Length: 318
Image (tube, rainbow, N blue to C red; front, side, top):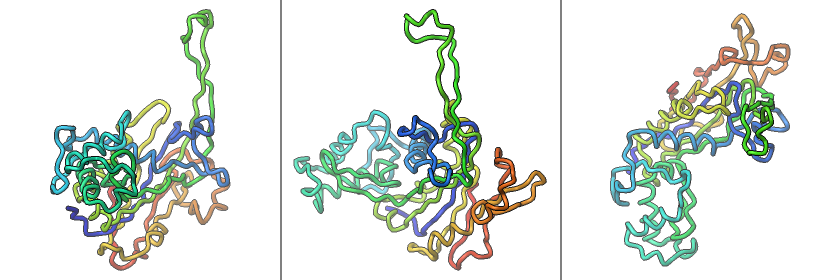
């Protein structure tokens, strides 16, 4: 049973230095870019993957021999979407656990079916990413659709980025017939620097539907703060979380529209004296003569707390 009694909205900033935060397979794996504005983009899927990976590294109870029933108030932290997993096997396990004969395979046949609903509850209880982000489970022994309480937007860089491709050499060859070659040449794609902003939402009502708990929420915050530390690679360069600003509502339904709260978080560019020159969204004209940003210290993130609506408080997690 969920014990989340408040709606949350949050703004999350992370940076990348000399790396590719999220390659686009439709563009030769170049960093994703909004073609109209030049702003860098990373998908919600890429950050959810990092959250999932982090959860698997914690000491939270997981493992195939450690499942709980659909009626249990305990939670398990297995991951549904993971490498080399067969999703239908999890659906089969859920139906077996709740005593379903697995004969009804189609989504339409299982809609409103009590055993399907029990299987859905079993999956929510045992898989952290299902009760957090939701899942479409209408294949095999269909287990319905879960809308997760936690939703991420695409991340977008606060200023335009410059995707770059450089050649690299390897003092080895792959094939025997290439042994006489001195070296082989490859490519690396990256951006010199980008500060990215992602916005997120947490619904107390959807948390009640999936069994998402306060412990799950605390793990989400922990994941967002630390997940890049467990995800370093040569291609991603230096990535790290920089800021996590959480708006907590008094009520389950919320006390103000999310966009009103997000607009209170402003990013300003600083000059070489550390002085704020202008807002990166509303005062772009003032920034045109500044050199490109290369460090987090080139920015200042401010929250206009004086304009905070009644019934909402700010919690800065990072």
